[in-house]
Length: 421
Image (cartoon, rainbow, N blue to C red; front, top):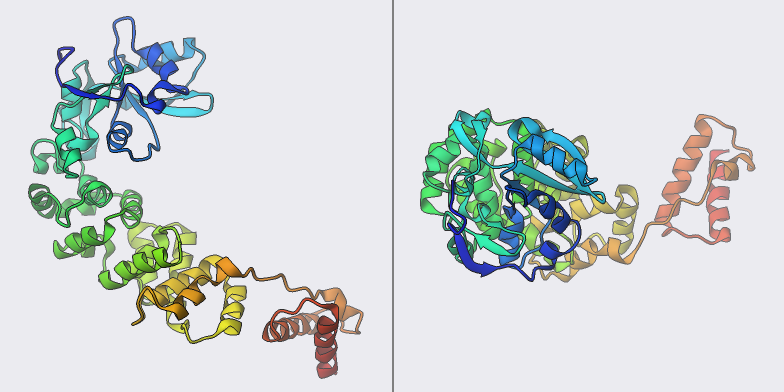
């Protein structure tokens, strides 16, 4: 068992508001007493030390799962056995969920289904994690513990496997993708850790064992990370991007997509960036749908991008682009515009493309104001003729520049009825 002071550093998060406020102190007070210990572990500690936003808070404890359930239930909290066979309980306090996991140590390792035993050794628990920067922990009084050199790697913005990278990867081949994803999020060097990269290449066959859903989740996070561009270059050079995506990576278009998003103040979008990286024709969208088991809505966006990015140009002019925005809607229009821009010969400073891509920010397409009743009262019978009249009228209304005044609308409707007679 780890001695109380082993791994303790001179860093402190004592004044961190997230550690001292809200529901977390109440949870730690229940778990960190009467012979048991509890600490915040992983991403929350990592991000707090480099002043990055904290999205979720995980807690580790020496208490076995049954004791965790007993304690939190007695305190009036809700215990959800989300992974109790692996030692994980989700504790809900005031609608805020915390994942609480009993300390573990590997007994046997065979891929993702490692056999584990519960323990009380904080060092052993840290050493079974993936990367040094993810193995930090902090007590409720703010003391930071580091058993594997995570703080030094965090200061250097270096993503490094704990122990032997080959062994860590063999325990779960998803760690290959996590290595690149974390480098894209936290690394500053254009080149990932050499030992880690070599181990990822050596273990590449293991990627075929992964579920497509898990691969999709990692890729979607990677493509929007701050340093996604150089990271994807490294993956491509290593032959891993082809292995994961099943096709060519268009790195120049991907880099341009990141630039044009910034140019119009558009947040990074994982589907749009995936399209820039890997979709040129419709077959690419189909392949990614199957390869990554994308959601249907994601596939539909990629398929639309594949068909539409060539048809949009900064020379279309405002009337034509307004008509396109009306037909596509803001999201698909932006997808087409940004991908067309990213694949064009123009820079991210091009005024024409900027005006075209930012149109949804300046103009909202109106609702077609003419209704079936407007044509019925003009003598158009219900049925196919009515539908045809509405379709022709809508096209005329778009061509006229989306007028809203009654006189202009009456003229459009009257002209359609006269033409049909």
